[in-house]
Each structure stands twice: as structure tokens, then as C-alpha cells.
Image (cartoon, rainbow, N blue to C red):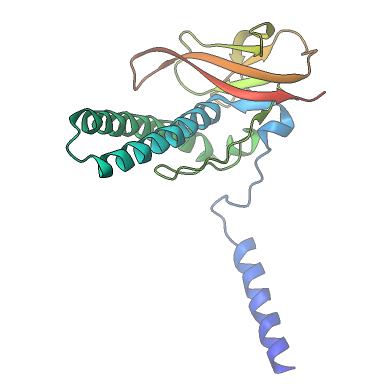
Length: 215
């Protein structure tokens, strides 16, 4: 009986402690795949995280080859190039995490911005990514430079199945939003392509995310 009382007291303390936390961690942020509104920085972060995973696999393969042939200069050069590429990739991931941090630090904005689930931080290759569920895709939010920003959805045979219109303000949050012009009437695997100006590169870039639509 005494043990039960102690456990109950501990549980009560934990409940009070978690409820009394006023740092905003108890704010529920809607899930992007459920709402159909995606934060662009989340999508870009997903792309770069997948790239990091692939680069890590290549590095491991080259290191294994080098262990068997340590004097191979071509392999050594290849390893150095891969490590440099991964370092650049990590810097870009950190930049995006900084942008996202600025968004979610605003407790007025934070609960209104749908988010993707947590991604493995580099260098933590995952090899566990699954296609993004884009069934409810409606909008993409952007924080930052809107130069050259566009979003298009392609089918597996490169047919355009959805295009996005003009940017507009998103609920006075300081974010911009671009919405689908017409409802998607398609089912199957798709590619979401995003083009934007990316500060770390100093130029307009494009990247793609694999997904699926299940109507």
C-alpha cells in the first residue's frame, strides 16, 4: 500500500510539472500530411536529410574500399569530395533548422503552422524514409525570400497534375502561402518539385520530394 501511494505521488508530481510548464511545449501543432498545408522549409529539410543518408552510404562504401586499398589516390579523392559535399549539406540543414526555429519560437504563429514529423539530425543516416502522403496537399508555406518560388506536382511519367498560383499572406503570420490552382484529380506516385532562391547557395535552386496521393 505504501508503494502504491508513493507511485501515485510521483505521477501527480509529473502531471503538475508538465502542465505547469509555460515554455509553449504543450502547444499542439497540426500535422502537415493531415492538413495538406506544408511548410516549405520542412520539405527542403526532408530532401536534404535524404541526401545526407545517401552521401553517408557512399562514404561508408568508399571507406570500405580504401581499407582494402589504402594507397588508392582516386578513392581518397572521392572520399574527400564526398565529405566536403556532406559538410555543405549539413550547413544547409542547419540554415533551414534556424529558419524553422524562428517560426516556431513565435508562440502566436507556432500552433498555426502544420509540421512534418521529426527528422534524424545529421550525421545520423536513417534509410527509413517513406514517400510523403500528399493526398490532402493544398498549400505550401514559405518563410523568407520569395524570389523564383514555384511549386509543381508531377506524375511518374512527368505529366503535370497540379500547379500552384500566386503567393499571398498567410493569416498575418509573416509567412507567405502558395495554393493549388485546381483540386488534384489523380491517384498514385507523384513528385513534388519546388523552386526557390536559397540564401546559402546565393541562387535559385530546385529540389524534388517523392510522394503519393491516395484518393
